[in-house]
Length: 452
Image (cartoon, rainbow, N blue to C red; front, side, top):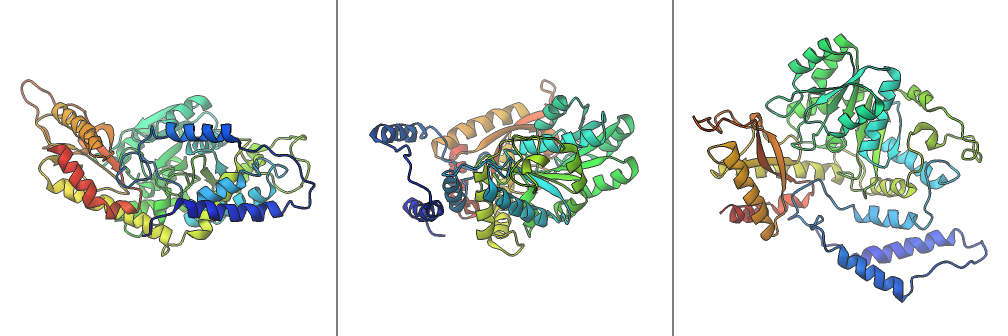
């Protein structure tokens, strides 16, 4: 893989900007603000301030879900910002609205939604809010259930919507426990079950295929939160349980995915899709000052969110054309590579006496482990120390407090003076850059050095 030249990006962007400007050359010239020396100095100050960040783009950053956007996404976003379209209404973003429709159609095709209603959003949080708002409109007053490993946004969203929230215990693999879910369905009036395909802490994939069987008996809506893990539907090396869940996505009522995670986009790009296009009736409203130049559908008419960056749509559209969502394409291969890196990293951790690994290997590209010790408290202290020392060796990991039941039962034995804790502090890596597989030896050696 060649090393990108930043100057090449700017040169190609300048060429595209010239092409864009030519489309408006028939208009009279007008004065535009320019960047003088004062502005240039401020940009230099901004660059200096931005040094106060972890090196998210580098393969040695193996911590949180932070991945640099693809150069074509950066360029397309910057190019579009010279127009700064608003995809709420066609009046504010005609070209970018059309490109959003095309980009969303690619997402729907990837997930196997033959008919759908959907659009981009500013984040997975807002996309999840919208999906659960629709559920609340369709099934007023009925509760929302999600795993204890689902993103915390679902409890907040339920509170905002005034709907009861029911937390479902996860099993020893981090997936939603089906026995616990059925007990909750019997006890509570649950209208929507959130299936998380790729939990943000451990990358677990809830058993959507089994949830669908319960749906037939208890009649609830299914919302798939795959903000993090959705794109893995294209991966070719998933374990059978995960593959079975992803194959059932077309039967869900709604789904959320974040192109600003594995989709190689700048932040500010989420997406929501509904299998039943008739939910569009729920959004009906009149806005005579906004919708006046076209009788065609304005995206603001099928969205709770009003102003949305047209630049996000153009960046996603451009990236999809460079890296199509095909099972045998480069985009899909990179996802499989990230999963392969996670499996190999977990294998090395499992074979080393200094570490303790969970009950099952990684379902996607998140790896978590802790330090071997007599008690969870001692493991937690060692994990914190390794985290701190790894950063001194330019290896950037993450931390997560997780249930001890995710690890083999014999990992910690209660003593007469120390009872077994329910949680333990874990080290965590999201190996979401395809380069991580090539850099795994470097990551491993730095981890061992920090552990020593």
